[in-house]
Length: 380
Image 1 (cartoon, rainbow, N blue to C red):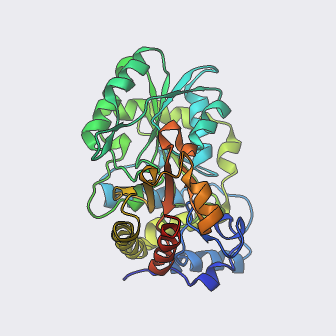
Image 2 (cartoon, rainbow, N blue to C red):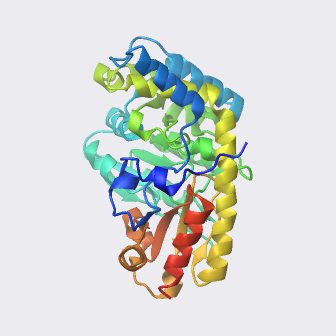
């Protein structure tokens, strides 16, 4: 089944950031929320919880972790021990609390720009200092700079915050690259926190390998962040998983303050269980729509904005667009919002490497995507 985006009139009844930040004349293709309807099994589970008044604190059960373990096994052939996982509020909390657990104040933490903008905030929140090792770009694809990572690790960096799949590029890091990262991290005593929130959104032409599954070294050095929030549009119900794959890391997770876990939303945990167990067919239909839009977007740019650079993502519903050929300066998103009334995410928010770029959300209807590109093209 194909899952289609909701009509604009219905979407504008939503009160989330995507639909409340800008006036109604703006097409919002910025924040990572989707325009698809809530998966029916999730809606049913949440309605049932409301009907029974089940809106209190979380109890001592691991049904969400068990559901994630089943999903990970069936989808990625990855055996997760639910006892080595912890739920918490969202992936940002997973990252910050994992880094607090793994580094000392003032330690350097590596990121690979252009990368998800909050990474620049999470690291100082955890007491660390950002160190940048930009991705390599050979003009065809991006990749991790393994030589640069080794220099940073050898130079004293204590952790690596990995984005996998990589936001904003939709880059799925190859297993061999992840194995190399794990080997380097083990050699230099570096911890790896792998943000894998977009993993369920891996496209049909790519293969996602969870970092913790690639080697014994990865299992020893790593902690992973997972959530149903991006794939099933559940950011507002607040649940994510902190995942370990070694006894030592699991012991560290369970030594965290109890509040890290109990701040999980009960509704979020209920929705997460339903997503991973009962909404796989729905997700497959959603990915069909996303991949169709991925192709449509390339066709629209070729027809209306041939100067713009675009490489199809292989995960997520986010596109990274190079507007430098149009001469619109370092922040084309600002002009596009002001004059075309299309909201994108500023390229420089992702690091210096984002100058002249912008991120576009493809999880909308083909009609909205078409109108957005046509509006932008009128600025030429």
